[in-house]
Image (cartoon, rainbow, N blue to C red):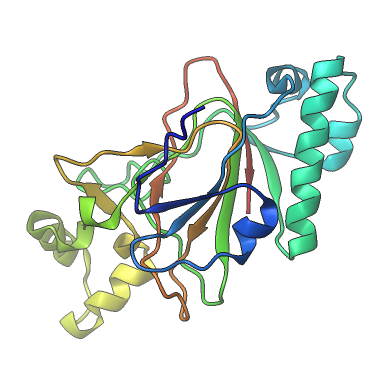
Length: 232
C-alpha cells in the first residue's frame, strides 16, 4: 500500500512506537507518524460509549466495562495498548469522545479556537501526541504555507485597538491571550490530513525545540458522527 505521506519533507514516517519517540525533529520535519492500518471495530466502541458533554473523557474503566463483539474487543485492546505505551513513556494520554469543541466567536476578525490553525506551546520540553480512531481527523500544514495572524496588517491593527495598555506591553498581550499561536493558511496551502489509526507526534514550541512547531487544526466534525481521539 502506498504511503500517503511519502515525499513530504514535513513528515517522517516510522513503523514502531520506539522509532516514534526516539526520532529528533530537525529542519522542516516537525511531524512524526507511526503509520498504521488498524484492525477492529472502533465505531462499535463509539456507539456504546455515553457522551455526557460535547467532550467526554473516557477512562480505562469505561472501556473495560463495554460489552463488545470480537472486532470491538480487538479495537479496545489497541486503544489500551496505545494508552499504556504513552503512559510508560511518561506522557499522560487522554481518550476523548468528541461531539465538538467550544467555538471562539468573541471577535469577528480573529479566531483562537482549535478549529483555527495553531501551534502548541509549553514552558517545558514536551510533544503533542494524537491518534484519531474514529471520525474526522486533524490537518497539519508546513510552516511556509501559513502566515502568523498577528502579522497580518488588518488583524494586527484591530488587536492594537483591542489592547488598551502601553505599546511596550503589546507583544506580551498577544502571548497572554494566545493570539500569537494562531495562523492563517496561504491561498496555495495544501493541508495534510492525519488520517485514521496513525499515531502522531507533533513538535511543540518550547525553550529547547530545534524545529519550528507543527501547525495543525481540529477538523469540523461530520454531522451526527462523534470522534474518538487519543491525545496528550
